[in-house]
Image (cartoon, rainbow, N blue to C red; front, side):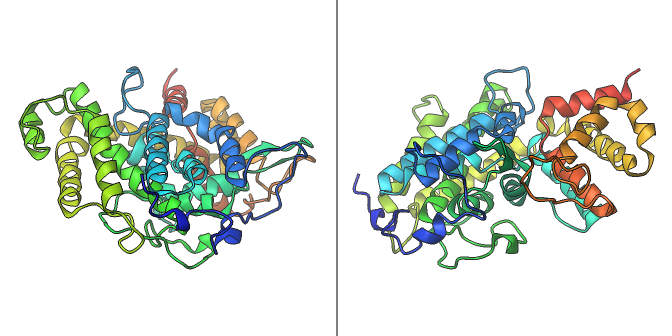
Length: 393
């Protein structure tokens, strides 16, 4: 491994370094802390509740009883593994890639991309704003997730700029080759759409590529396990030129893609696949959409998800004017939401709470926005349980 991008790595020698490690507010210091800035970010991420809840959030396949189907947490681990390998091959900062990868999907809603679509429809209707998980991920680490410091004060994750940028810039849905970081240090609040800007660091680019590498291979493996691709295996073998009929699995696909990326990437071309492999990636993505993501079986649950999330949202929305009615319907949901909201609104502030007020409860739209953030943090199981309480007797 030649580490061809080592001089562009996120180190103190990089001209962007001071911007990379900048935090919105000073982070408390420990006299005996031996971690780097990015390692501190990593441990703050894995100790927050949004990270823990990823184990009960859908990646692609809603299969909560099947231990062998990829969850959002397992996908996160795959992205961390792939981006770390890419960083090692190219000479980039593995601590930074690990932190970005571990946090990249903290903004995902329950029920995967279908849940994201449902919340976006609600948000556009009631707020005139699009909901998208990359932006929501930045909101989560900047405003929603809180930890106690060594003085028992609570504050948000307060991550470095490089990690925050990697979260909102990670969109892996866009087809592109020759990915390079941007030079501009921008206010991340200026992001209006997914993929509006390239990541600020090469490490952020590595995570963006790793996200696509990770889900393409694993989604195929899961679909084979669940029998969704039984009628399309010959097409898949042909696509992968696997005439020997060796097993198609995630590790083989990932290894081949990483190797090709390493062989073709450099400072001039950016993170780059060979033309042949790039075309294969586009064909694999097309194959996955046609035969997995748009499959009849996978989409049977969409109405179910719509009912759950819209019912919860409408119920919490009603509490703004008629709290007593909803408390009788689902007292636990109302109680949990109010406890959550008390951390962020301008009423009943706790003396030890140091994070900012982000919701004005006298503003009806702020209240609706809070509901959307709250729902986006739910696990599949919690959302289902709240829904069943509301419709049951």
